[in-house]
Amino acid sequence: MRFGINTFLFTSPFTNESVSLFPKFKEWGFDSVEISIEDPSHIDPHVIRKALDDNGLKCGTICAAMGPGRDLRGTPEEQQIGFDYLKSMLSMMPALGCDTLIGPLYSRVGRAELVSKEDYAKQWETVAKHLKTLADYAESLNVKMAIEPLNRYETDFINTCEQGMKMVNQVNSNALMLQLDTYHMNIEEKDPYQAILNAGSKLGHFHACGSDRGTPGGDQINWDKISSALHQINYDGDVVIESFIPDIEMIAKAASIWRQFEPSQEDIAIKGLKFLRSRLIK
Image (tube, rainbow, N blue to C red; front, side):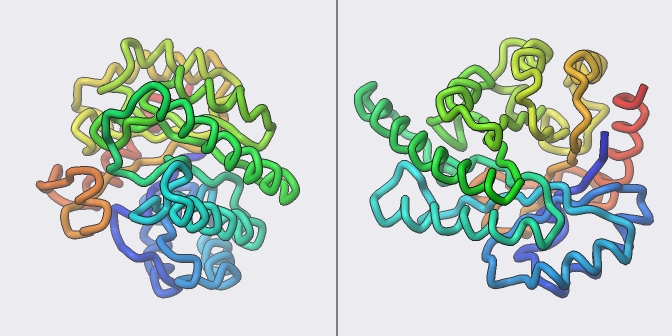
């Protein structure tokens, strides 16, 4: 099990210059970095890989920035833009030494609307078709994707582990996995412990956040049960702290980040990592 930090907590957009954060991440004790890439033109993957290696870190995951215009169930233009963006992310992963592309890969974050069952079914088939094509491409590169259920305020499409697993099973590719996030599970799942067990070997990535999107620990999440479930399924992937600050406007609007959760970003990273290591490592 590796412990990582999502770069959205500290910077946006992530560029070649953002590697200046890596020495701090290593000093704080992180094993990996989850890089949120808003535009592939912002980075040279070879530059980023060298900086990671120099600091003894790994890019375990790239977090897709599914902003406006990137939507596999949107207009034909939005579908193409979203598809091209995701394919470009997959293309740079081997150079980065990155294992998995994660996030709500199916739709724009913040698109939450009530649609008919017929329209939802059409959207579902459209997304499944795109994800199958992307999964085939990912498999050719020996990398993976993991789709993330989001809470009802950020999407109407995939909110629960059950829905996410339905899509994973329909696409039926070794390159498509499920991602779970304690923040979203705290809102949407009847039992987050059981959701992790249900994901089982298909759990390809895990986000650890406080129930208020802040520091893991000191919140209302039952971390002992989370730990137990992860160990029961023999999860050995990355566990990443993902939190946000109001200063990063793109993600703040999409995820309704209107206030500062903790005294500082460093507080979230350092205290969160210490807590997770104490609870999840056995």
